[in-house]
Picture 1: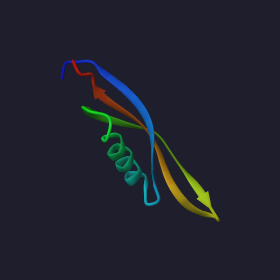
Picture 2: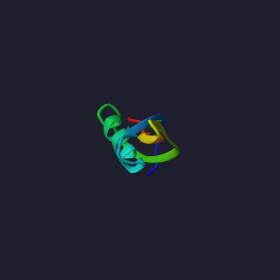
Picture 3: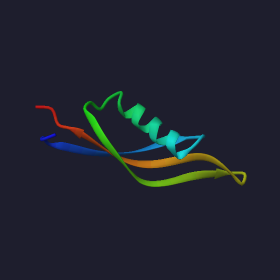
Picture 4: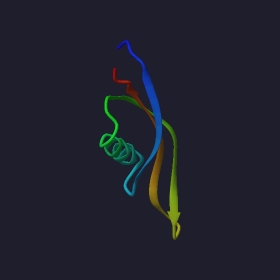
Length: 68
């Protein structure tokens, strides 16, 4: 896997779970970022509304290989 990689950071969200927030973030990024190879969950957080969890949020780092 020799090569040069770039890292981008984004936030994925979901009303269901942290895992679904990861999947949603990666799915959306895949629409414009090519050659994604790995991800790292940097942090997890969420939004509360009326005393209940309304949204799960994950901050992700995504690594992708630089094209030559």
